[in-house]
Amino acid sequence: MIDRRRFIRNSALTAAAFPLLKSKALASFARGSTLKDLYKNDFYIGAAINSRILMGDDPELRNIVKEHFNSITAENEFKWSVINPNEDEWHFEFPDEFVKFGTENNMYMLGHCLVWHSQVPRNLFVDGSGNAISKEALLKKMQVHISTLVDRYKGKIHAWDVVNEAITPEEHYRKSRWVDIIGPEFIENAFHLAHEADPNAHLLYNDYNMDNPKRREYVREMVKDFKKRGVPIHGIGMQGHYHLESPTIKELEKSIKAFIKEGVKVHFTEVDIDVLPSNTARTAEISTNAEYKESLNPYKEGLPKEIDDKLSKRYEELFKLFLKYKDDIERVTFWGVSDDLSWKNDFPVRGRTNYPLLFDREHKPKNCYHAIAALKS
Image (cartoon, rainbow, N blue to C red; front, side, top):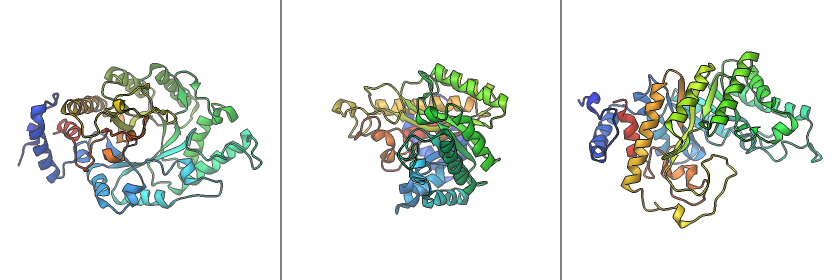
């Protein structure tokens, strides 16, 4: 029996250590010690899944999810335009299967997301004549959407991203049709509606670039105000769309501490690490697009060892931070399962070959997986 305490200590991984690390990780897998097992006393280890993974004809990816993760999020299939494209039209096939899969495998399930400015039906903000909808009518649409969806999975889905990406450093409240028609109070209305539909659900505000000092402060102020006025907010989702060298661990830690101070749980909700060069600012703003250039897609034939080492080191640094605040971090969820299915192959530049996740295109665990496992072995 291999002593897991000797399985590479909590120091930076060196290139020479990787072969030994892999062999010991395989032995760990044989004993059932995958990430969800190693971190079971710290926080949930999650993955975003989609219909190809859950309902496709290849069981391999489903098995990876079952073996390595104990939390799941739907990547797109709970979003308004997909599940409820018209007022009386609902598509529950995937969500029902999602809940069944999560229940059968004793997983923590997150519904993503109830209210967002993007991926909404074209007719959401207009009436039957195509004119701008009234505040009252839009609030009614919100009420029907949230109550229908949350009530259907009451007691089954544990947490919801109630509002997604509604605050920016430049504008405070993002300029959106929600703000134009209802005003910033649409956020608290959404939280109240979700809580009424399932009083036991854990309710989150979710956003990207939460290391940004202005966004962090705006969100902190919102949480403080909501807590003071009894608005039911329980957690903050810090989207983890990171790069090899940004954001800094220091700024991430400041955000964790700020939200803990306001009495909410922290979730790292969409973790992946972009290893490719970029000619745009670091952002997860879905409307961002950049023109394809060969210089922006340098690793089509595989990831160079130097970059692979940086990726492992980066994941190691992040998880050391997560472990430092494990008592207040509920969940760390990766935005996908394997590199071949990651959205980062097409964002913000379509058609690239990226390597942001823990499993490679062969669906095998990467060195970055072993780096995370080593911290708990």
